[in-house]
Amino acid sequence: MNKPTLRLPLALAGLLATLAALPAHANDFPTVDRVLYVQECMNGRPGPYYEMVNKCSCALDALAREISHADYVQISTAAKANSIGGERGSYIRDTEMLQVQIKRYRELQTKAKSGCFLGSDPR
Image (cartoon, rainbow, N blue to C red):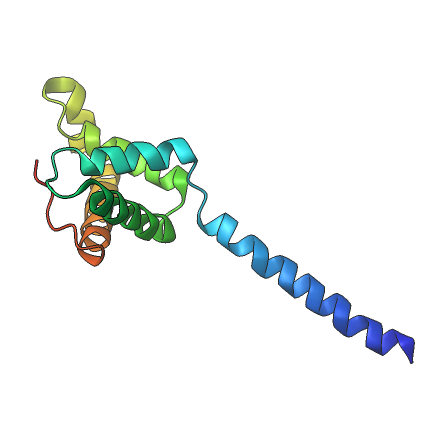
């Protein structure tokens, strides 16, 4: 009789442990990258400091729900490098896979910023 009653708490404990690990996996952005994103987002945006910190943090949280940190690093780097002129930048501009990723990144950013009431990028 003890075995069936013991199985339920063990199964419940296992389920809770699995659920507790999900947010950590889905939100794997290191603190330094969070800070840098928020600072970049706030740069040049008018508005009260506290309000902009919250809006830009909201945008990063929304972005982090959609992509992993590793994917973020790859596609945000490609998006920034897309504007490099000359031969060096042509590698980024001429690689179809990177252009698809850049488009996805911009769409994710637009969605995140819109959902957090940031509007368009002032730059």
